[in-house]
Length: 102
Image 1 (cartoon, rainbow, N blue to C red):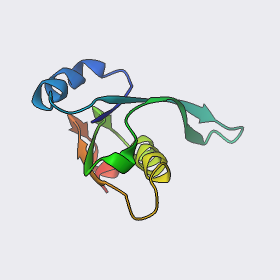
Image 2: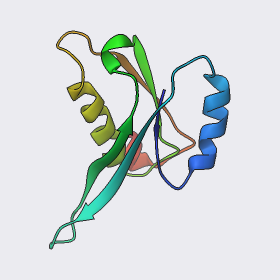
Image 3: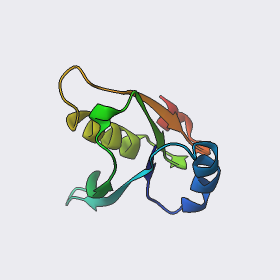
Image 4: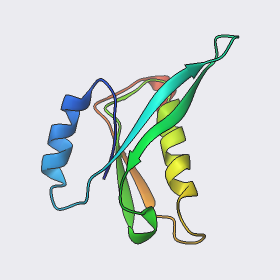
């Protein structure tokens, strides 16, 4: 299980309880805004077991608005995998906006 660090960190407690036998990893990110006002996501912290060794990864992101952070995290984790060893990704969230669900 990889927890995406953000303001809704209290939402992780039920996930940790539900998946207590699973290794837990963390990913932290920051939003970067360029001169035109466009926001990007940059991974700034990561601690987790190599995704190569896992059959599936539960990505816990408590609030999904546009989905940009979630997509960045999954792409980042996929890039850490050896070719052909990509785990299945499962997303767990408390609140998802329509835009983020698409």
